[in-house]
Image 1 (cartoon, one colour):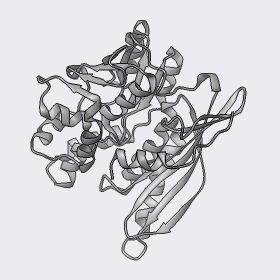
Image 2 (cartoon, one colour):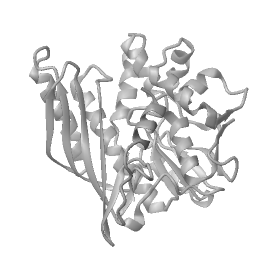
Image 3 (cartoon, one colour):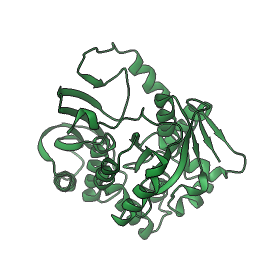
Length: 328
Protein backbone atom coordinates (compact mmCIF):
# COMPACT_ATOMS: atom_id res chain seq x y z
CA UNK A 1 0.00 0.00 0.00
CA UNK A 2 1.37 3.41 -0.99
CA UNK A 3 0.47 7.09 -0.58
CA UNK A 4 -1.94 6.91 -3.52
CA UNK A 5 -3.92 4.02 -2.02
CA UNK A 6 -4.19 5.82 1.30
CA UNK A 7 -5.32 9.06 -0.34
CA UNK A 8 -8.00 7.30 -2.36
CA UNK A 9 -9.30 5.51 0.73
CA UNK A 10 -9.47 8.78 2.66
CA UNK A 11 -11.25 10.56 -0.19
CA UNK A 12 -13.98 7.92 -0.10
CA UNK A 13 -14.89 8.84 3.47
CA UNK A 14 -17.71 11.30 4.15
CA UNK A 15 -16.48 14.84 4.76
CA UNK A 16 -17.09 16.20 8.25
CA UNK A 17 -18.33 19.79 8.55
CA UNK A 18 -18.15 21.78 11.77
CA UNK A 19 -17.36 25.48 12.24
CA UNK A 20 -14.80 24.59 14.93
CA UNK A 21 -12.97 21.96 12.86
CA UNK A 22 -9.83 23.79 11.78
CA UNK A 23 -7.96 20.87 10.18
CA UNK A 24 -9.64 17.60 9.23
CA UNK A 25 -10.18 15.32 6.24
CA UNK A 26 -11.06 18.26 3.99
CA UNK A 27 -7.75 19.97 4.78
CA UNK A 28 -5.21 17.18 5.39
CA UNK A 29 -2.29 18.13 7.59
CA UNK A 30 -0.01 16.51 10.15
CA UNK A 31 -2.86 16.20 12.66
CA UNK A 32 -6.49 17.08 13.22
CA UNK A 33 -7.26 20.38 14.97
CA UNK A 34 -10.49 21.36 16.73
CA UNK A 35 -11.16 24.76 18.27
CA UNK A 36 -12.48 24.63 21.84
CA UNK A 37 -12.56 28.39 22.39
CA UNK A 38 -11.12 31.58 20.95
CA UNK A 39 -7.95 30.91 22.92
CA UNK A 40 -7.69 27.12 22.82
CA UNK A 41 -7.59 24.41 20.17
CA UNK A 42 -6.70 20.74 20.53
CA UNK A 43 -4.39 18.84 18.19
CA UNK A 44 -5.03 15.10 17.79
CA UNK A 45 -2.80 12.53 16.14
CA UNK A 46 -1.90 8.82 16.23
CA UNK A 47 1.09 6.91 14.89
CA UNK A 48 2.50 3.41 15.41
CA UNK A 49 4.74 0.96 13.58
CA UNK A 50 6.80 -2.23 13.82
CA UNK A 51 10.30 -2.17 15.38
CA UNK A 52 13.02 -0.48 13.33
CA UNK A 53 15.79 -1.10 15.88
CA UNK A 54 16.64 -4.18 17.94
CA UNK A 55 16.77 -2.55 21.37
CA UNK A 56 13.26 -2.45 22.92
CA UNK A 57 13.86 0.67 25.00
CA UNK A 58 15.20 2.61 22.01
CA UNK A 59 12.29 1.43 19.89
CA UNK A 60 9.88 2.77 22.50
CA UNK A 61 11.65 6.13 22.51
CA UNK A 62 11.64 6.42 18.72
CA UNK A 63 7.98 5.42 18.36
CA UNK A 64 6.94 7.96 20.99
CA UNK A 65 9.08 10.76 19.52
CA UNK A 66 7.61 10.03 16.11
CA UNK A 67 4.02 10.28 17.36
CA UNK A 68 4.68 13.43 19.37
CA UNK A 69 6.26 15.10 16.34
CA UNK A 70 2.94 15.87 14.62
CA UNK A 71 1.93 18.11 17.51
CA UNK A 72 5.26 19.94 17.35
CA UNK A 73 4.96 20.37 13.58
CA UNK A 74 1.73 22.29 14.12
CA UNK A 75 3.23 24.57 16.74
CA UNK A 76 1.50 22.85 19.63
CA UNK A 77 2.37 21.46 23.03
CA UNK A 78 1.70 17.77 23.78
CA UNK A 79 -0.71 17.39 26.67
CA UNK A 80 -1.68 13.72 26.98
CA UNK A 81 -0.74 10.44 25.33
CA UNK A 82 -2.22 6.94 25.13
CA UNK A 83 -0.29 3.77 24.33
CA UNK A 84 -1.25 1.74 21.28
CA UNK A 85 0.18 -1.81 21.46
CA UNK A 86 0.03 -4.96 19.34
CA UNK A 87 2.02 -7.73 21.03
CA UNK A 88 2.73 -11.43 20.30
CA UNK A 89 2.09 -12.73 23.83
CA UNK A 90 2.73 -16.38 22.94
CA UNK A 91 6.09 -15.86 21.26
CA UNK A 92 7.71 -12.91 23.01
CA UNK A 93 8.72 -12.27 26.61
CA UNK A 94 6.48 -9.72 28.31
CA UNK A 95 9.64 -8.02 29.62
CA UNK A 96 10.24 -6.82 26.06
CA UNK A 97 6.92 -4.97 26.12
CA UNK A 98 7.66 -3.49 29.53
CA UNK A 99 10.96 -2.14 28.23
CA UNK A 100 9.32 -0.65 25.11
CA UNK A 101 6.69 1.07 27.23
CA UNK A 102 9.36 2.43 29.56
CA UNK A 103 11.16 3.97 26.59
CA UNK A 104 7.89 5.49 25.41
CA UNK A 105 6.92 6.96 28.76
CA UNK A 106 10.36 8.50 29.24
CA UNK A 107 9.86 10.43 25.97
CA UNK A 108 6.33 11.41 26.98
CA UNK A 109 7.68 12.82 30.24
CA UNK A 110 10.51 14.60 28.40
CA UNK A 111 7.83 16.24 26.26
CA UNK A 112 6.07 17.45 29.39
CA UNK A 113 2.99 15.35 28.63
CA UNK A 114 1.07 12.75 30.63
CA UNK A 115 0.42 9.10 29.82
CA UNK A 116 -3.28 8.61 30.55
CA UNK A 117 -4.02 5.10 29.27
CA UNK A 118 -4.06 3.13 26.04
CA UNK A 119 -5.16 -0.05 24.34
CA UNK A 120 -3.44 -3.35 23.60
CA UNK A 121 -4.28 -6.43 21.56
CA UNK A 122 -2.58 -9.75 20.91
CA UNK A 123 -1.04 -9.82 17.44
CA UNK A 124 1.49 -11.95 15.60
CA UNK A 125 3.53 -8.84 14.84
CA UNK A 126 4.80 -6.36 17.43
CA UNK A 127 3.67 -2.76 16.93
CA UNK A 128 3.83 0.25 19.23
CA UNK A 129 2.98 3.92 19.10
CA UNK A 130 0.92 6.66 20.67
CA UNK A 131 -2.27 8.60 20.30
CA UNK A 132 -1.40 12.15 21.31
CA UNK A 133 -3.49 15.19 22.21
CA UNK A 134 -1.87 18.60 22.23
CA UNK A 135 -2.95 22.19 22.65
CA UNK A 136 -2.32 25.39 20.72
CA UNK A 137 -3.76 28.89 20.54
CA UNK A 138 -5.87 28.95 17.34
CA UNK A 139 -4.02 32.04 16.11
CA UNK A 140 -0.66 30.36 16.75
CA UNK A 141 -1.49 27.19 14.85
CA UNK A 142 1.08 26.22 12.22
CA UNK A 143 -0.13 24.34 9.13
CA UNK A 144 1.45 22.97 5.96
CA UNK A 145 -0.56 25.38 3.78
CA UNK A 146 0.89 28.78 4.69
CA UNK A 147 4.15 28.84 2.69
CA UNK A 148 4.62 32.09 0.75
CA UNK A 149 6.61 32.87 -2.38
CA UNK A 150 10.03 34.16 -1.36
CA UNK A 151 10.18 32.08 1.83
CA UNK A 152 13.24 30.07 2.74
CA UNK A 153 12.98 26.43 3.83
CA UNK A 154 14.79 25.01 6.86
CA UNK A 155 15.20 21.31 7.64
CA UNK A 156 16.17 20.42 11.22
CA UNK A 157 17.36 16.79 10.97
CA UNK A 158 19.46 14.87 8.43
CA UNK A 159 17.85 12.45 5.97
CA UNK A 160 18.55 8.78 5.35
CA UNK A 161 17.01 6.98 8.33
CA UNK A 162 14.99 4.57 6.18
CA UNK A 163 17.95 3.55 4.05
CA UNK A 164 20.27 3.15 7.02
CA UNK A 165 17.64 1.20 9.00
CA UNK A 166 17.44 -1.16 6.01
CA UNK A 167 21.22 -1.52 6.10
CA UNK A 168 21.08 -2.22 9.85
CA UNK A 169 18.59 -5.04 9.27
CA UNK A 170 20.91 -6.44 6.59
CA UNK A 171 23.79 -6.26 9.11
CA UNK A 172 25.73 -3.95 6.80
CA UNK A 173 25.81 -0.84 9.02
CA UNK A 174 28.28 -0.56 11.87
CA UNK A 175 27.19 -0.02 15.46
CA UNK A 176 28.30 3.61 15.54
CA UNK A 177 26.18 4.50 12.50
CA UNK A 178 23.17 2.63 13.85
CA UNK A 179 23.47 4.39 17.22
CA UNK A 180 23.81 7.85 15.66
CA UNK A 181 20.71 7.36 13.50
CA UNK A 182 18.72 5.91 16.41
CA UNK A 183 19.66 8.90 18.55
CA UNK A 184 18.40 11.27 15.85
CA UNK A 185 15.10 9.41 15.55
CA UNK A 186 14.64 9.41 19.33
CA UNK A 187 15.25 13.16 19.59
CA UNK A 188 12.12 15.22 20.13
CA UNK A 189 11.29 18.12 17.82
CA UNK A 190 10.29 20.05 20.94
CA UNK A 191 13.06 22.65 20.91
CA UNK A 192 12.78 23.22 17.17
CA UNK A 193 9.03 23.81 17.56
CA UNK A 194 9.56 26.27 20.40
CA UNK A 195 12.13 28.24 18.43
CA UNK A 196 10.07 28.40 15.24
CA UNK A 197 7.15 29.77 17.25
CA UNK A 198 9.46 32.29 18.91
CA UNK A 199 10.78 33.55 15.56
CA UNK A 200 7.47 33.40 13.70
CA UNK A 201 7.00 31.29 10.58
CA UNK A 202 4.53 30.76 7.75
CA UNK A 203 4.24 26.95 7.50
CA UNK A 204 5.76 23.70 8.74
CA UNK A 205 5.46 19.96 8.54
CA UNK A 206 7.50 17.04 9.84
CA UNK A 207 9.37 14.83 7.39
CA UNK A 208 8.26 11.27 8.00
CA UNK A 209 6.90 8.41 5.90
CA UNK A 210 6.46 10.27 2.60
CA UNK A 211 10.08 11.44 2.64
CA UNK A 212 11.42 14.93 1.99
CA UNK A 213 9.93 15.00 -1.50
CA UNK A 214 6.48 13.80 -0.46
CA UNK A 215 6.07 16.21 2.43
CA UNK A 216 7.47 19.11 0.40
CA UNK A 217 5.03 18.35 -2.43
CA UNK A 218 2.17 18.37 0.09
CA UNK A 219 3.30 21.76 1.38
CA UNK A 220 3.57 23.12 -2.17
CA UNK A 221 0.15 21.81 -3.18
CA UNK A 222 -1.63 22.98 -0.03
CA UNK A 223 0.05 26.40 -0.15
CA UNK A 224 -0.49 26.78 -3.93
CA UNK A 225 3.18 27.56 -4.51
CA UNK A 226 6.26 25.98 -6.00
CA UNK A 227 9.35 24.86 -4.08
CA UNK A 228 12.98 24.62 -5.12
CA UNK A 229 15.31 22.34 -3.13
CA UNK A 230 19.07 22.88 -3.35
CA UNK A 231 20.29 19.30 -3.05
CA UNK A 232 23.83 20.20 -1.93
CA UNK A 233 22.42 22.07 1.08
CA UNK A 234 20.25 19.25 2.44
CA UNK A 235 21.63 17.57 5.60
CA UNK A 236 22.11 13.84 5.07
CA UNK A 237 23.63 11.03 7.11
CA UNK A 238 26.86 10.46 5.13
CA UNK A 239 26.53 6.67 5.15
CA UNK A 240 23.13 6.81 3.41
CA UNK A 241 24.63 7.54 -0.02
CA UNK A 242 26.79 4.41 -0.07
CA UNK A 243 23.95 2.18 1.12
CA UNK A 244 21.61 3.67 -1.49
CA UNK A 245 24.17 2.95 -4.23
CA UNK A 246 24.20 -0.66 -3.03
CA UNK A 247 20.42 -0.86 -3.42
CA UNK A 248 19.62 -0.95 0.30
CA UNK A 249 16.40 1.01 -0.14
CA UNK A 250 13.16 0.28 1.76
CA UNK A 251 9.99 -0.54 -0.16
CA UNK A 252 8.43 2.72 1.00
CA UNK A 253 11.07 4.65 -0.95
CA UNK A 254 9.92 3.10 -4.22
CA UNK A 255 6.27 3.75 -3.40
CA UNK A 256 7.05 7.39 -2.63
CA UNK A 257 8.92 7.76 -5.91
CA UNK A 258 6.09 6.18 -7.90
CA UNK A 259 3.44 8.44 -6.36
CA UNK A 260 5.26 11.77 -6.11
CA UNK A 261 7.44 11.71 -9.26
CA UNK A 262 4.79 13.48 -11.40
CA UNK A 263 5.07 16.46 -9.02
CA UNK A 264 8.87 16.66 -9.04
CA UNK A 265 11.34 18.14 -11.51
CA UNK A 266 14.83 16.81 -10.81
CA UNK A 267 17.93 18.21 -12.48
CA UNK A 268 19.95 15.59 -14.37
CA UNK A 269 23.03 16.57 -12.36
CA UNK A 270 21.48 15.36 -9.08
CA UNK A 271 22.98 11.89 -8.41
CA UNK A 272 20.61 8.93 -8.34
CA UNK A 273 21.61 8.09 -4.75
CA UNK A 274 20.70 11.63 -3.67
CA UNK A 275 17.31 11.23 -5.32
CA UNK A 276 16.85 7.97 -3.39
CA UNK A 277 17.61 9.76 -0.12
CA UNK A 278 15.07 12.48 -0.89
CA UNK A 279 12.34 9.88 -1.50
CA UNK A 280 13.44 7.82 1.52
CA UNK A 281 10.67 7.40 4.14
CA UNK A 282 11.84 8.88 7.42
CA UNK A 283 10.97 7.83 10.94
CA UNK A 284 10.77 10.70 13.44
CA UNK A 285 12.43 13.05 10.98
CA UNK A 286 13.00 16.74 11.37
CA UNK A 287 10.73 19.73 10.87
CA UNK A 288 10.51 21.36 7.45
CA UNK A 289 9.90 25.06 8.10
CA UNK A 290 8.88 27.80 5.67
CA UNK A 291 9.57 31.35 6.81
CA UNK A 292 10.40 34.84 5.61
CA UNK A 293 13.96 35.17 4.24
CA UNK A 294 14.70 37.93 6.75
CA UNK A 295 14.19 35.42 9.57
CA UNK A 296 15.76 32.29 8.10
CA UNK A 297 19.38 32.79 9.10
CA UNK A 298 18.34 33.86 12.60
CA UNK A 299 16.25 30.72 13.12
CA UNK A 300 19.00 28.49 11.71
CA UNK A 301 21.53 30.04 14.09
CA UNK A 302 19.20 29.66 17.08
CA UNK A 303 18.56 26.03 16.19
CA UNK A 304 22.25 25.27 16.00
CA UNK A 305 22.97 27.11 19.24
CA UNK A 306 20.28 24.94 20.86
CA UNK A 307 22.11 21.78 19.80
CA UNK A 308 20.20 21.13 16.57
CA UNK A 309 23.49 21.23 14.73
CA UNK A 310 22.34 19.78 11.39
CA UNK A 311 19.68 22.45 10.82
CA UNK A 312 20.13 24.00 7.38
CA UNK A 313 18.46 26.26 4.84
CA UNK A 314 17.71 23.83 2.01
CA UNK A 315 15.54 25.71 -0.44
CA UNK A 316 13.08 28.43 -1.26
CA UNK A 317 9.42 28.92 -2.11
CA UNK A 318 8.49 30.20 -5.58
CA UNK A 319 5.29 31.37 -7.24
CA UNK A 320 5.54 28.79 -10.01
CA UNK A 321 5.15 25.99 -10.88
CA UNK A 322 2.33 25.60 -8.37
CA UNK A 323 2.25 22.30 -6.53
CA UNK A 324 5.60 21.23 -7.96
CA UNK A 325 8.98 20.66 -6.35
CA UNK A 326 12.17 21.35 -8.31
CA UNK A 327 15.39 19.69 -7.13
CA UNK A 328 18.68 21.20 -8.26
